[in-house]
Length: 326
Image: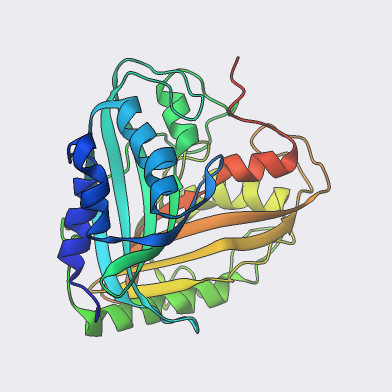
């Protein structure tokens, strides 16, 4: 990254959780542009300007979690391969603490809770100027005893860090380019699928992009799964049955660093709601979906995939307010 060292960005994001409140404005000025724009999962959506970001997101988050802390599982940096370019960092993180005060209308559990988050931050002039953040609020609701979805598909679990424990600042752009090449090849092949088997060419088997022991970590409501058959059963089949015309891509950012790659679209998918999904009957509505994917690869195979989806926004479009948990 040309504008600022990625470790400094990481230190700043962690510091937002621990700097004394009366020092917050001055601390934020060191790294967050006054006119920064943060797009955050529903119900936050767009926040404009440093003051609004601190007032409506950072401070409420800290107030909700007593002793709030941030722990990164993946933190990578690179130059965006998409046409809009820019220097970006991307992270899979957990915010955690004792969930003692309401957050986004979610009743607190009074217990240790982990709020997972996928984040992309663009750096320009030494400061964060643009961010996209997908917080898994449905999973926080589940932890608080108010699950907004009726059926568990995969395994609901804390997002694990990479099996190799090397996802923090690998700082290897050359290998990152190769990793991103592999991921982009997989994404290109995913566009077409067999409507009976829900398979796509080039995904598994000899010459396929995924390792046979792939792990796919999904958001609350979908859960995590193991190997391609588990992925199809717990996520791909239900999703494609509900949205058979889904069209993906439309990414604003794709970066690679070491054995890791991260891609995101806001929104990434467009589709029509044709069948029941997560308990909501088909509406026939045209929908969009905000998506973040983080990958670890090894020996030209995708080993692990962490996925954040804005299911709160998707449900809103389908006519359901998941935060109404009375």
